[in-house]
Amino acid sequence: MSHTDNGFRSLTLQRFPATDDVNPLQ
Image 1 (cartoon, rainbow, N blue to C red):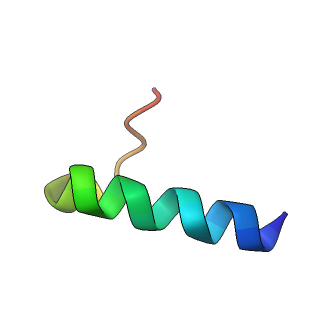
Image 2 (tube, rainbow, N blue to C red):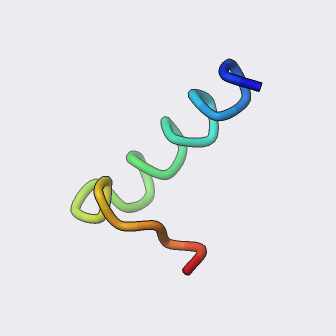
């Protein structure tokens, strides 16, 4: 699960580098 979360977070940072602290799903 940690690996999946890390990969998802990486994609999120690439798509939303300014919202790394904010959850884009919310």
